[in-house]
Amino acid sequence: MISSVAKNPTARIIAGPKFAFGFTVMIDDPLTESLEHGSKLVGRAQGLYAMASQHDAGLLVVMNFAFVEGKYNGSALSILGRNPVLDAVREMPIVGGIGIFRFASGYALAKTVRYNQKTGDAVVEYNVFVMHA
Image (cartoon, rainbow, N blue to C red; front, top):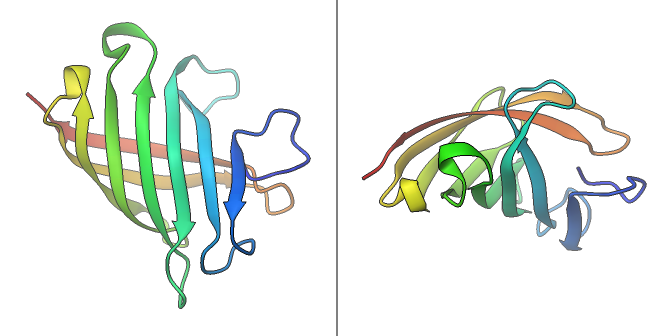
């Protein structure tokens, strides 16, 4: 969510003009089991993204999926790559992990399910395919 009107925002603009080259946002978003409101929290998506393209909506994404529940509690997956946000489905590489995901590699497919242009709130579905030790 990128919103100054939100009661408890999970994203903050830290640099640059909004939605232009150089725009940078720090995130600490909830990861839930499903897309439904109130779904069980299983972790946090923590990191940052920045508008890295001067010609299209291409973000640089540096993000960890830090898990806080179940057998993955204390483990994390790391994503580092390009997110062409206007594409229906975006592929980003899994470049590593910790805990149960040590030596992880793979990819994540992201799909925006809901987006509110007024508030910047978004719900994104991630399907993650990973190999690990």
